[in-house]
Image (cartoon, rainbow, N blue to C red; front, side, top):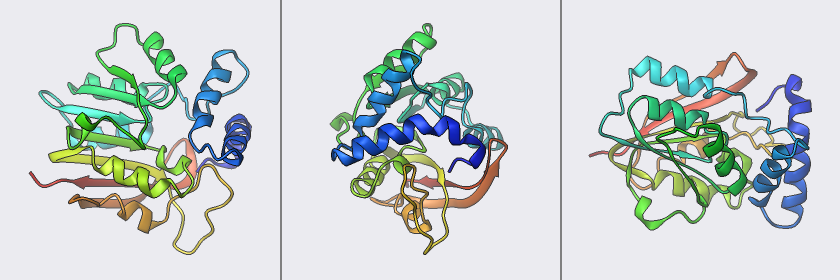
Length: 226
């Protein structure tokens, strides 16, 4: 969860998200935010012009090589995480529910090998079921109320191929602590553990910090047996 120093960056997203949620449209605010950012009328608070530090740290620590493997980035937004994976050799799909976000990512990386597509996590293409050797989900699930958060978690898990891995990153909250008004809604341990659905097995579920936030974060790695 963003620290107090990020509050000005979060204002546009918070305003648009709450209006969308009041209209019973939990995902529509993403498009409105990216469209407003395109005209200079809003800031996308998670666009830091670089891959997420906890993803970057993870791939460096594990010496990840994506040669001959497929990856997908959930809620890819600005595209920096997807570009990192493509640079590691993965055939990478990056999707977002926002058409404007996808268009902006393509424009930002015109020579990219990433396949940027518009898709809804709550209703992904059937061909993506258990299709990816690496699934990266960073801060997307925590931006959804529950419902449909539990359904989104299950859909993320369903993307992991046999022998594949899921890396999930989200703001953390202690069990029993209030989730707050959101979005985002920091996840409790039981919600991170819920990614272990449909046969996925936890490898590491850890609370970590990084240089861009004073808050606690979950970083969870899960595998599907081959």
